[in-house]
Length: 113
Length: 115
Image (cartoon, rainbow over all chains, first blue to last red; front, side, top):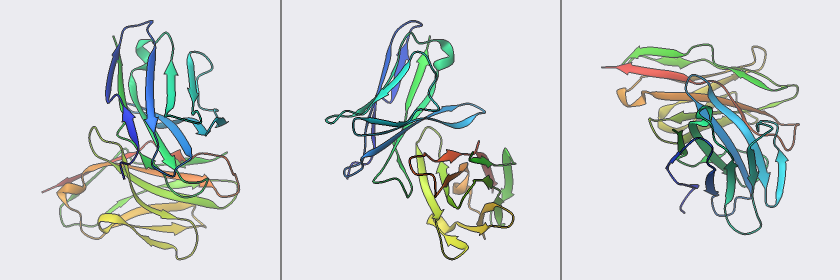
């Protein structure tokens, strides 16, 4: 059981480039959640997805950020035209249903230079 | 709206002493409550959860938490702290009645256990 797999672990992008963060949930988990962790701010919810559906995107910035969880393949968090303020650790979690706890991945640390 | 408060940014205890990390929550209905721990440069690891039943919940690594509905609290406790318990601890909540909502996390409390 490989757990929740996130890649890459570290990602460096120049301002204006695109960042793509990938998350493969645990086997049997169809619910995926993305969180962003900034220093001094804790863990902020971004988006909740099920296969092919966005359930709750209330935490997503209105511009430049998007997420998907296709029928086949990993969930993708996409950040277009990155800015320095996007530098953070991005964590993905999965769960088998709407209740219960999450299993977290090890995160992707995005640095925008 | 759901919310979680962890009133202490940092808790310092000596090894062998009991520890408490505080958490209070706000939901409109009945809560699911969780504690997670994060070690440096790692993801979050599940410690324990409360959904229903006994107010005292036992979890991993000797941790336990007490659900207090009247005080809307879910404090994390351990009778005897270890240096290896030093980490960042997060409390999280979700409203049972709000299907389709994600866990909301507190800002985290850094626990530092000195030898």
